[in-house]
Image 1 (cartoon, one colour):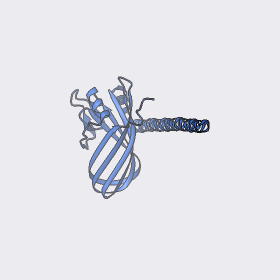
Image 2 (tube, rainbow, N blue to C red):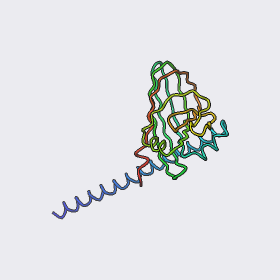
Image 3 (cartoon, rainbow, N blue to C red):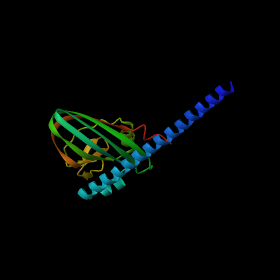
Image 4 (cartoon, rainbow, N blue to C red):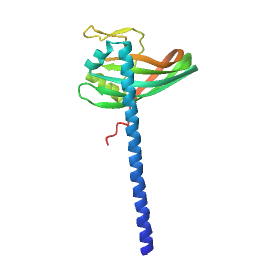
Amino acid sequence: MKKWLTLLMTALMVCLLTATAFAATNQEKIDKERAQIESLQVKALQNLYAKVPSAENVIKNCYAYATLSNTGIKIGLFGDAHGRGLAVNNVTGEKVYMRMKEMGLGIGIGVKEYDLIFVIGTEKAWNAFISGDIKFASSAEASASDGKAGGAIEGASIAANGVWVYQMTKKGLALDASIKGTKIYADKKLNKKE
C-alpha cells in the first residue's frame, strides 16, 4: 500500500511540474508574439511617417489608432489575407492585440505584404473597432473628410464611421479588382491578463 501511495504521489508531482513548465512556455510564446507585434507597429508607423509626414501629427492627436501587418494572396478569382496588429487608445492608454481575416472574390493574381494603419476618431468608433463590430466600406479617396470639423486626413481613406485607414504596401506585387469581406477582431489569447 505504501508503495502505491509513493507511486501515486510521484505521478502527481510529475503532472504538476509538467503543467507548470507548459504554462511558463506558453506565456513565453505569448510574450514573444506580443513583442513581435509591437515591433511591427513601430515599423509600420515609421514607414507611414516617411511617406506621409502629416500622419505623425494625426496619430499623435487622434482618439486611438491601430496598425495591422498583413499578407495577402490572390490567385484567379479567390483571395485571402490575414494579419495581426495592435490597437492603442491615446486617451486611456489601453492596448488591444488584434487579428484580421479577409476573403476576396474578384479577378487578380499576386502576393503582397502591407500595413493598414487605422485612425480612430471617437470612443464609440474605438469600442466598435476592438469588439469587431465595424463594417468596413470601400473607398478610393486620396483624402477623407472627418464629416464634422471639415478637416481631412491626407492620404487616408474612410474605412467606417469615425475610422480612417492608410494602406502601405511593404513588398510584393498584386494586381486585383475585388469585393472583399474583412473581419478585424481582438486576439483572445494575446489579450489574456497574466
